[in-house]
Image (cartoon, rainbow, N blue to C red):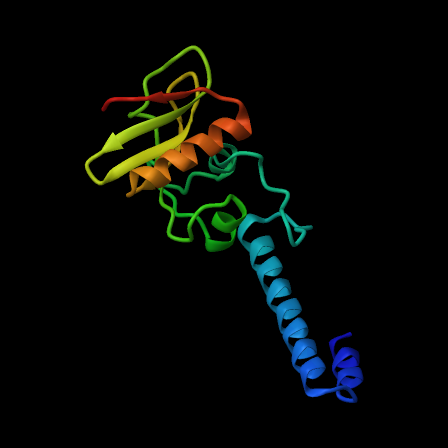
Length: 159
């Protein structure tokens, strides 16, 4: 289809040609991203605007298999998955298992640390996954977004 678009555009003005080339390049780039996501997550059928990923980052984290020989799983998000969850490409995940205290309900946990803040969804048993934020305002924005998206209360946890 891209060759058809370019051949039709070749009879048009220079501006139309450049827009056609840009559209074809964008289409190819999105196709490459889609195949990368399918390879990384193992789920096919991604749309351009969203994916068939679990609804929360915590669910995605729990679905990942534990590599053999590892006691504690520490993961970095692939750039494409981070983008789909609305996180920066350099986002680091931290397991909240030993940090968040057990409660009787799900909540958004905010843990102040020396290098910033860890914000994530904490399960009633204290487990969960959080994202490390260096700036307090970005951590606050992420906590508010998680709270609004999932209808969970925000609680600050002291380490």
